[in-house]
Length: 211
Ligand code: SF4
Image (cartoon, rainbow, N blue to C red):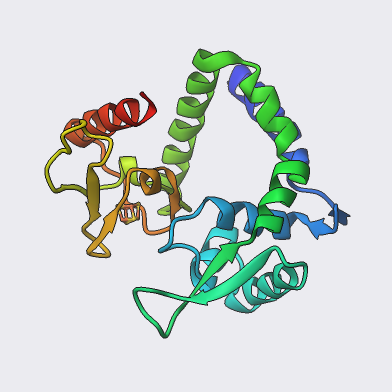
């Protein structure tokens, strides 16, 4: 237990990078959290309600945050292509630049990257295990990527050049999902633990797309 406590206390100290009083580069910590999430979320999750769920706020608070980010030209709303009555939030080029240059977690990301590939994988998997335990206890999971989601299915045959052009299908939204989109955050994610076929397929597709 002392080791576990020591690890958690270190995590709490690291969290000072993203939970802070006042603002940094003009944004409060929750506004950074929202901009960061919207910069990484897939098209199904870039909505005001999904944002409210992710940051753990009311719809009214999330709307206020969206307005603040819009006023700084970091965000624009566009009608959803799937449902014209809904809006999808898009991070602008200026918003992406702000994230790249000033996001308070960038220092932490750089420090983690310095651990090397094996260190990053070990830390990621350990934190994921911890979150899985917490989710099981509290019946929640904020967001994760398609790769581990039970709704992801293969769609269509492989292309002649290999799997790089292969597409996937989200069985929840009944919509195609590209390889790039499988790396984005989704708040409708549902964990699956036994899908080696898709996992291997995605790894092959990713390697093919890189080479
Ligand atoms: S497969 Fe899962 S994570 Fe991906 S878009 Fe569908 S619900 Fe979201």
